[in-house]
Amino acid sequence: MMHSMIVPVWIHHESNIRKKVLVYALLDEQSDACFIKESTMNELNILGSKVHLKLTTVTGEETIESTKTRGLIVCGKNEKIEIALPVTYSRKNIPARHDQIPRPESVEGWPHLQRVANELMPYDRSVEVGLLIGLNCIRAIKPRELIPGKDDEPYARRTLLGWSIIGRVNGDCQDTSDSDSVVASKVIVNKVIINGDTKCSFLSSPTKVKEIIDFAQVRKLFELDFSERETGNVPFSYQDKIFLRKMKDGIHQLKDGHYELPLPLKDDKVKFPNSKELAMCRLMSLKRKLKQKNGFLQDYVAFMKDLIDKGYAEEAPYQGPNFNDGRVWYIPHHGVYHPKKPDKIRVVFDCSAVYKNESLNKNLLQGPDLTNNLIGVLCRFRKEHVAIACDIEAMFHQVKVKPDHRDLLRFLWWENGNPDSTVKEYRMTVHLFGATSSPSVASFALKATADDYAWQCGTEAASFVKNEFYVDDGLTSLPTTAEAIALIRNSKALCSKGGFKLHKFLSNKKEVLEAISLEEKAKSLKNLDLSSEALPIERTLGVEWCIESDTFQFRISINDKPITRRGILSTVSSVFDPMGMVSPFILIGKRILQTLCQDGVDWDDDISDNLKQQWRRWRDDLIQLKEL
Image 1 (cartoon, rainbow, N blue to C red):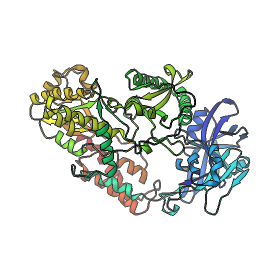
Image 2: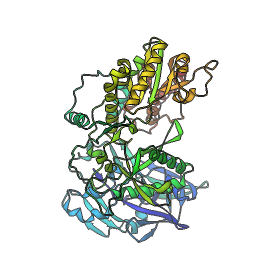
Image 3: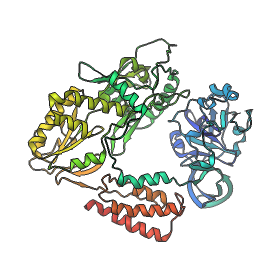
Image 4: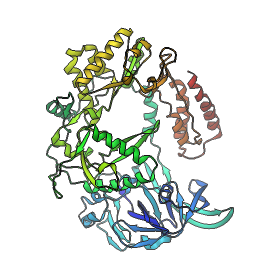
């Protein structure tokens, strides 16, 4: 892993010293100008003057729109000296990868760097690389202290903005010549055009000038059409066998029917550092975002309240201010919206967050892939005349965590959801979305339910639950409506005995739907008059299912993408066709992409007129898939 001169800084505008934003800043001695990311400018509510920059790079010339601003001030996160930046220009992205950011664990294994470990901020994924400081602000990047180390060892460098680590910190990494991308730093801004007037200038900022073609990703895209694999004969790895043993030895069913399972730790005696500092830092960053985005706070608070009210989380027991027995871990969290459900938020717990070179996911066994094959489930869904589909409500949250493991699932939240109130400690009582082990743990509990209650609820219901679910979505088909109604009744009873609830039922037969209670039907059916209205189109495992005609269809939405390798890849891969029903047509688009890869065309380069014509013809035909 290569680290660059990147430091955490507070940035604000001289006109509003109370509005500060924490970002990572790239200190670049090869750049003659300072640049700020557009999203960082928006967060600071800065309005500058619009300019056009004419950039000349090794790949050609381009003119971009930018905003010029003055009055920005930065200060190192752990420093007190404020530095005024010169004129700064906006860019959509600052070309630095997050894995280049120094962090406390970067100095592990390097004795000469140990004394700066406490000076480095724990890595925070929510903090973006929002600033580039160039040579025209020499005060900020001038070295004040240096810890050189031996030849080829990483070195530490202190500026007025703080310490950074430069060089390769992971000795097991390959040489940079084998890396997937190369970041170089010279973009010459030949001209700055302001209100039509051209002002000659020579500025620079880093840019990604070469990306090695990742043939593995392209090959993976091509092979999606042939992804069916033989199931049942895949041997378990040694770690998978350990996971299954831990689950079988640790499973326990509670009085309310829910199964209780341990966290599958790789080492049951592992000692964790107290990551409360990381969680608090992320919570403060979340607080700023909650107050800035309309509706975000209300949605987030409602989700967390529901989590606590339903018993999925509980207030953590107080153990004293300095308590740390190595069995406590605090998980940061953030909210995301589903692109197809913009009104529905999901709070994701970042179990991969690293503190002092440890993370929760790093210490968990992932477990074997217990998920049924997607294509197999879809094919059997098309087998008989009567089709039914359903969903398990909050599947992961129906599997409890053993009490002695719950302190590894602590998180911070405000009392009553008020960001201005006291921060309190909570802990999850259930396996959570974000832990690498949760999919396998939940699948294990679901299959255990089927095995334990097959004798009571019928082998058909047990077979449906074990073999016809893809994670939390169940799809199957039966010869008659009577059999479908009986399967729904028995499957609901079986799942409820394991603490799982089946809901959001769909069927292509109205007789089946009439036998399902209103609260258990899918949302699109609740206000539907089954006697006179046609059944809707629904998504089942990502595929458009026209329930009325009982057919799979394609809903095509073509966005205006540039005719470049990047735009073509985006359009081709946007068609989700797991069963390969239109693969003869899709392969034409993939062949165009393959040609671009073979010719070494870069992601955003212009393509030949011949390929442009082929692409336009294929794209125009793409929209006709919706008629299929």
